[in-house]
Length: 433
Ligand code: DTR
Ligand code: CA
Ligand code: ZN
Ligand code: ZN
Image (cartoon, rainbow, N blue to C red; front, side):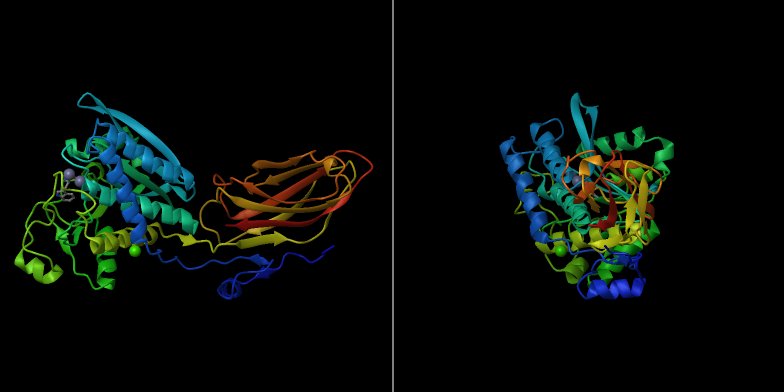
């Protein structure tokens, strides 16, 4: 039986412990500075492009609005996001007599009144597979979203990602999305980042000159890796950010060029040739061979940098533990009792896979009703008179607590509902993955 009370480790000690290989069984109130973005693996982004190419090949050579290849592209991206724990929504609209689709993916958590959004159009033209235009943007945004999930990133702001239909017909999908968004919801969007053609074979590095904070964020990234950038001058109105800008939402984005010809000065700056940035723009040759890997990698990492920087979140170190080791006696056939842990220093909401460690010593577990009570009073049933005459409940439950604010007093509530056997709470632990 352990009678020690919850031990608090100062943030510094907690971080030191984490640095030394993780905390061991004590309360951590680590509150790290805003975390740096992870590197986005180029191989993963290119695999998405290969998959999109396969989809086009299997569907008449394109992924255009109204064609089977586009819906197959939506299904492909959605499946990966669902598997990663996103809340996805497919929005339908009609254009040119055909059904169009937008895919919206929300990362659970963050301040719902401050939404940072990133997006790209997923449709191609009918003449080709659209791997640079715009598989490149779609794949990079997808991989960044998957990196958020891998990191267990809990940003201050709520993260949302979008893949738009029928951009090539005139920004139709993103215009529909914005038009359908109530003004109260539009007001919550702190920024929209757009990525349309970010892997051009003869690349330039262009930054949209719209919202200054977003523009600076991107410029700083490229300056940090020693890559000069230019302001995107032809971008206004030319891609989905225009749909958001037109209703006053701050926008930004990246672009590596389309059919325009790279100048000799730009060749001096970026290398390549004084030819089109993308000679396969809107052509059948816009395939997986129509990609410059360096440009795709740099822009993918720039997207992650912007998401992490502009969402001002922190990554809860994997395995952050909050626990209460004090014993609490459970009265036989009596009133409910509780053990409490106070979660601090975790930004945003709790995760969808919160690990709830329960350790109850008892001679008849079937007597017990065991609940997790969130700081706002929400009740999550863990065990309800189950297990019969077996001894003890020593188990880790995985709870989807993503609708709960993480910080606050979480309680393990236990009640013995039958006479003749009794016991005590030995340990109650919450682990943030
Ligand atoms: N309209 C985009 C390509 C495009 C052309 N100029 C810009 C500037 C900024 C972003 C995108 C573009 C398309 O064909 O999808
Ligand atoms: Ca990378
Ligand atoms: Zn296009
Ligand atoms: Zn495009």
